[in-house]
Image 1: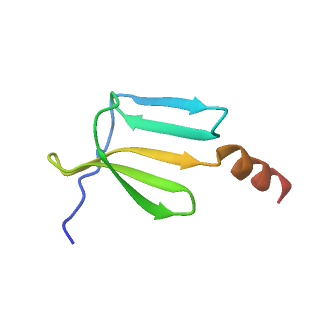
Image 2: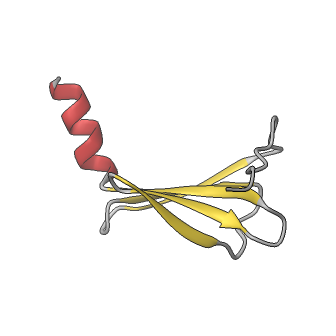
Length: 72
């Protein structure tokens, strides 16, 4: 497997939360087209194949995760 380039200090982290779907979208820099790679447990990495770098993360079921963490 090829190495994935990870930015050391991103300029900005952009986010958007869809309350109805309970999904948090995080983007490194401005959101851009990417391939979604499901890595399990409701976490999807967004990967720009042409630049060979991770450009974002999608967290599915954020509210449930937070409530579960608070109950622990």
